[in-house]
Image 1 (cartoon, helix red, strand yellow):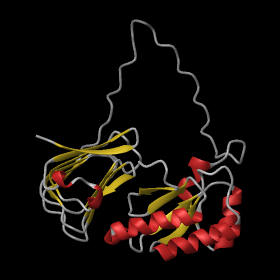
Image 2 (cartoon, one colour):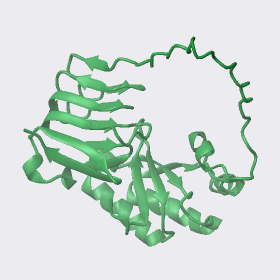
Image 3 (tube, rainbow, N blue to C red):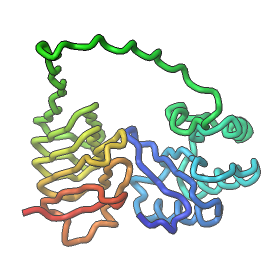
Image 4 (cartoon, one colour):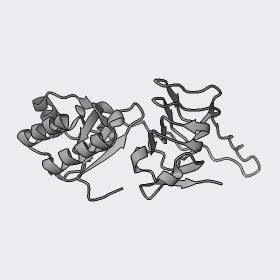
Length: 250
């Protein structure tokens, strides 16, 4: 991750990108987005983008925010919402004529603000005699999703709360998504998004790497950013301190 960028772009599990503003430099943000679109137009051209001001110490004024929204549209993407933050964010969204994305509400709700209802505390359990210890409850596990046939262009496959194994190929224009890891035993020519709900320990494995885009916990790379010597190889993809790593496997 290049921490000098003004905006950090992450890819979500439904193809909507989240642009978290780190430096309120409208010109730089627009320039970065235009470069992304020019580098991978099939992926980012007219892509839906949520603008997230949660990384700033203070919100921009309406004119600055509107200039950013208009500039992002001019760069080739489509801002569709603001990420929920504070009540001031809600007011800003109203002025801009944009909705708020509700799933960001809990993450950015300010301390001391309106609190969500809490679950009542459970009473303390009765002490268990030493001669009769409580039996350990076996952890429940959900089996992984196995896809036996090719995932074809235009198809999307999602493994919720589990790993995904594809025994065949993932075609160009197809998308495979998993909350866990992804194992592909054929060629990966489309998109693969592992750790879709933020699991940074998720990984992607594939036998033949030609991916349009790969992402782990939202951190992504497009094919243009991957060394040429890795194309067509068997690879493993993982996160290391917020850096997406790709390495060939034997």
